[in-house]
Image (cartoon, rainbow, N blue to C red):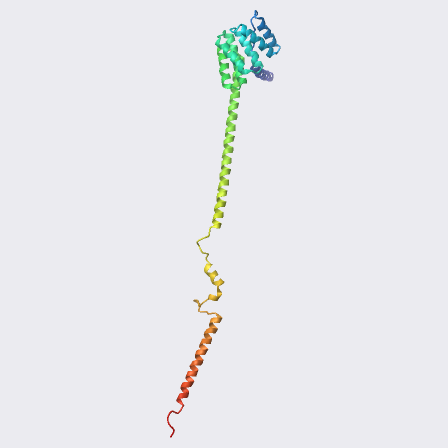
Length: 263
């Protein structure tokens, strides 16, 4: 039982690696035997001399522009050089030539590989689906199709995570900015309040005035006078008393004074 699971695991693992390899390796078609230039291109392609192979396929294509196999191999050699735009153009032109079903199926499969390389994942899925429509038993197209779908899911998941992270950071920054603004406003209001004179007098204002001016005190509800005022009043009373006494003395003296003629 354990051996069976190990076998299945390695089978799936190898299949996964094979699919990745397939994504990077387009299927090449054999050129017509009578076309020596195209055959030279195939031999150079198999030796991984893709630049030289492309030149041979270009030359063969000029001689036979409607030969689908030459257009197909030219697209593959351009793909191997990393010139995906031109490779895609050759594949698209080949499909317009309406090749046989097998060539059409391989072309759509290779278009899926090119589009995957160009990071056009949605379009690559369309190409793999077309390849499967022409050959439902093509396991390579099925595996590559699922592989690209997984890449799209991962990409969308990452985008959502980045978006969520960005929103959280934006909310945090907004909250901090708002808090700083409120703190700044409170500090500004505090300074304004400190610098603005109040219309209300302190409760001890009048009391402090009296303390600051003791010489101006007068009789209050308690009836008390200052020492200077008491001495002044006492002096006035004493002078009045003296005048009254002198008046009294003069009046008494006139009573005992003889008024009239001598006898």
